[in-house]
Amino acid sequence: MGRQVDIKRAEQVLRDHFEQAEQDYLNAAPPAVSERAQRSADVLFETKVQSYREALLGCAIARIVDPQIDLSLPYAEQGDNAFSGRTLDEQVVNPFLVLKGIPCSRGPYLAVFRRNVRFVPEIAVGLKDKKGYQAFLAYLEELRRADDQYALNLLSYLLYRFVELRERSAIQLVRLSRISLEQVRQLTEALLSRKSGGLMPLLLSIAMLKAVSNVYQLSWKVEWQDINVADRASGAGGDITVWEGDRIRMAIEVTERTIDQTRVEATFQSKLSPLSIHEYLFAFTGPRPAEEAYRTAYVLFAQGHEVGFVRVSDWIYYNLATAGAKGREAFLEEAVKLLEEAPATVKMLWNEVVRQLLQI
Image 1 (cartoon, one colour):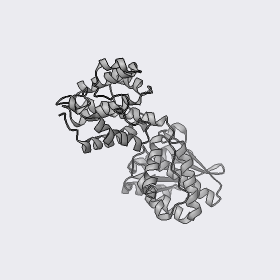
Image 2 (tube, rainbow, N blue to C red; image 1 turned 135 degrees about the vertical axis):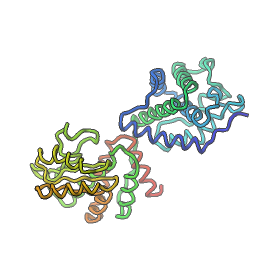
Image 3 (cartoon, rainbow, N blue to C red; image 1 turned 180 degrees about the vertical axis):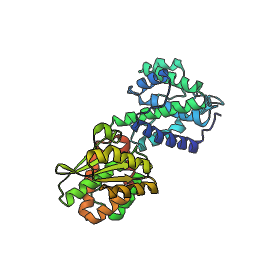
Image 4 (cartoon, one colour; image 1 turned 90 degrees about the horizontal axis):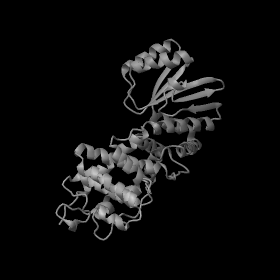
């Protein structure tokens, strides 16, 4: 009796949409949903009853995987279109929330929604937080009435709020006391292969520069700005500016976007020439810059401006190879300092990669 939810597909739906929700959060771009859904979510993510939002997440996934499911029937024996909410929660939702460091309960079907309950207004009588349950039912009704595209939006918005919830919790960073040169390569390549809104390559580049300055006792002052702040608006030469005394030693733009001729020319016009910057470095994580970009750099070199291009992972690897074990230790220390102030999404990315590296 009841409909069987495809667990593998449910896991894939959750993974894919959560990753997008993390990107949306970093870009401050929540998915579009109705005011009713937003108001309901406001209540659900403020209530102390975690079961409401966790059960709702399972319902949203079930709606995507099988639109024929009756979301008001979370126990398989309740009818032909019922589903097992507890199975979905225990095999998919709860393990995922735990893995992603999101505050959660042991499971809504072990707490609030026991004894073969249906998601109907009548059961509010026995619940302590009736306002929270009404918000749960309102969001559930949006899911029931939604077409396929809007149902995806409702799931994405729910996940966006879970990411937001995690941001308000304390994420403890996994720390490394030492790291080998080969592990540096593995760590940086793994971190840079994941989406972080451009923040991870920026932080790793800063950590490397500060480590190099410390190890070689250079008189560098490394300054940087938020990845989303326009250089022109802030008056900065790039994402990172390395000062040597009262002059700019070099300016660095850390980028995931393609570097072409137009971009190099625009950089010269807006930064190199006005700010008298003689050394500018594009540190990239994407494809190699276009040949026209290199030719433009040659022209600028003849005019007295050094414009270079380097892949972030190579830049970090070779600098730390030269800096030795002391440099790698300094890099780890600086990286953790920077990550302490980073969004929880980026902290979790670091933790996941480090645990994989150490197999813990």
